[in-house]
Image (tube, rainbow, N blue to C red; front, side):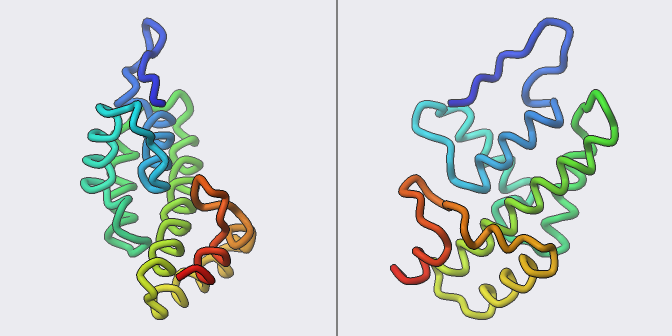
Amino acid sequence: VVCDDTPPGTHPYWESGWCFAELSIAAASDQLPQYSHEAVARAAHTARSSGIADNTDTVAIEHVRAAVAEKHFFFEEDQQVVMRIIRSFMLKRALVDAIRTKNAGRLRTALAACLSRDLRDFLEQPVDSRLNTPLHLAVAY
């Protein structure tokens, strides 16, 4: 459930950098439930317009970087933190999508990116509500 209420005197949820990160991660992970209809629609638009739903290529990353640059942060250094977090979730999404579509080339690329960024733990983390890991998905598909 997305609760977009913010305290008086702060930026609205949809303009906040950390809130954008939260929404982006939920969109990239397909984790927004049916209870947040407006947020699902906004997240889908955000994911498409910022490149989050695409993959980890340079163009998508630049779209996300531009979207993050427009958001408000209390500490400007947090922009880089948010970018690292979103890029990691984009990579996880690319890994899962490659497995689900049985695209060996994209899977090799995603795995190489995980290894080069020392994100081996992605292979042991759940990627869906049934707590399947990428290995579980690969065996199932």
